[in-house]
Image (cartoon, rainbow, N blue to C red):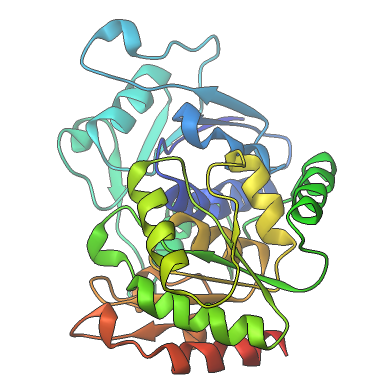
Length: 311
């Protein structure tokens, strides 16, 4: 059986969709699973052995950007529900085309939506419901993430070069939306408390100006030295870096979901989005939520959660 998964972006959403591939591979071990993904996020898919082939694609308005496939697929899944992901499914010429139930733009023209079970509150469980509808038997989501050995070795060396040889906490002060960012002063206060307890604080993020500015603001407010690894890893290397950490602290952003997929304690900070649906999977007990504002989440309370997770 040839199976195509269309989930192009973004990092956290790709992570949350990985259990679909794992469930289908367990149900149909002889199948070949192909994943269509935006090249920027292919690194996370490379860490999932359940995926046999990765197609890097960025469909646009011009047909020349649409993918072509050498094989015919038996099953194609649109796990994003957008026109661009739907185009990939349409081009697959699959016998059966299913999709995540939240279909936007023109997605409904290309696949049949699968309604989630009433008990599936988290988006990961709603994704897995699509795999169940396709024939997989899955009681709990399994992300199947395996950091490559060479990446783990490289990240250990990078940490050592930056003075990190003992326990450390990964922090991500950035987020796709400014409204999802915990105040820099709160991150600084948390970092000071953790460093005082002997934990290094390693900050991650991209090269984008917004990420760099968020870290700079934290660094200017802290009383202790921080480790800046923003923009110094690929997506695949980031997976290995987080796998080495004792905990991760961040908002509703991709690296939080990477940590959860790896089983690393993931302390989530939420306000604009509700953790019951998008928290690091299986770790809602470590999330802090405020209906009013992220600024109302107390650094002392977050410190207690981190310390309980790593002590």
